[in-house]
Figure 1 (cartoon, rainbow, N blue to C red):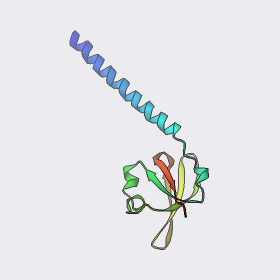
Figure 2 (cartoon, rainbow, N blue to C red):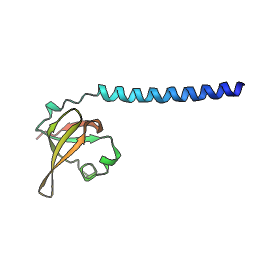
Figure 3 (cartoon, helix red, strand yellow):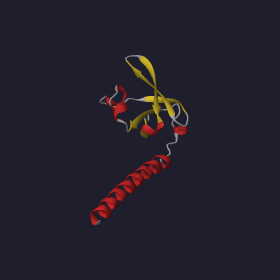
Figure 4 (cartoon, rainbow, N blue to C red):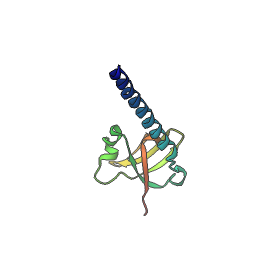
Length: 105
């Protein structure tokens, strides 16, 4: 009988811990307000927190890719940068962006 109660407590604490971690992550993303309006049309470099995006050319170059934030909404950001004399526009999820570094000329 004691083993069943102990097992139930372990499962209960594990479930509560998972829910608390989800709430903590959600709270951090909601309170992390990046003010894109200040960076609109200015040269910036982005730091992302997503392995799939981090592995792309945009974020694996030795020097950070410098581009311009063209447009944004609640979920997406339109980032324009140059590669081999071509202008490339890429949509990036706002939730994947951890910080924006403005490039001063």
